[in-house]
Length: 197
Image: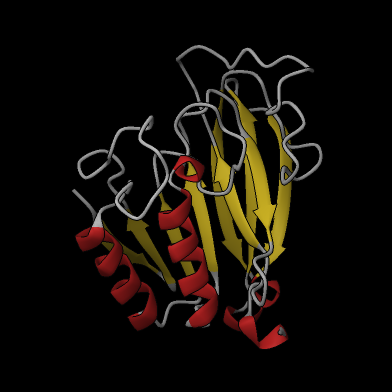
C-alpha cells in the first residue's frame, strides 16, 4: 500500500516498507529489496514528474542511518544506493525523508557525491518503549546525526513550511509528549538544489 498526495506546494510520497521486503538477515545484493521493483519505479516516476517545491518521502524505517542494527533502509544498501543515486542523477530538488520505528527522535543528514544535503527526520515514539542506547553503542554517536537532535524520550514530530514559494523553509521540531519543544532545526529549500553543484 503506497500513495501520493499534495498539500499546497508539497508532494507527500507514503511508502510501504513491509509488503515487498526481503528478510533483514538476507545478504546484501540486487535481490535484497525493501521497496520492491514496482514501488521503486512508481516512486521514481512520481519524483521526476513532481513540480512541487518540496517532495516529502515517508518511510516507516530510517533512510539515511548507515549503522542501524535493526530495521533501516541501510540494511538494503544496493536498493538505497539506487534511490539516492537516482535522485542525484535526475537532479530531483527539494527531497526530504521522514521516518520512524527507532524508538527515538533525531535528524540525520548526508550529502551524496554530486548532490545536495539530504535530511531524514525520524520521530518515534509517543507510546512504545524508548531506545536503550548506551555511549558504547554505534548508534549513540551516529556519524551523520545533526548535532543536538538525539531525543530519548516519548515524543512526536512536527514539520512546518513557511516563507514565499521560492524561499520556503522547512522546520523540523521534536516535541515532548507534553507538547514542549525539545529541539528544532530549519532547512531552506534553496539548500536542497542540484543547481548548487
